[in-house]
Length: 77
Image (cartoon, rainbow, N blue to C red):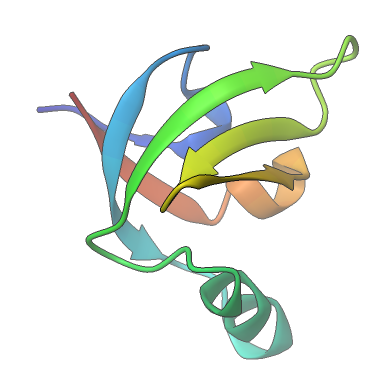
């Protein structure tokens, strides 16, 4: 299975988070949103200018800016 940055995932593509590379406050914030290794995610869509990205995790929809999604590495299905 390929590992990619969450930013580069396609719409309706699913995968499992492998790592969160952000440190400090941003890393804590990302993990507080439920984005940590082992979590399944599905890309639901993107805004018209491709930023932010909407994703589905643990039964809810969350949006992330692309610069935040760059720190999350996902193993795609």
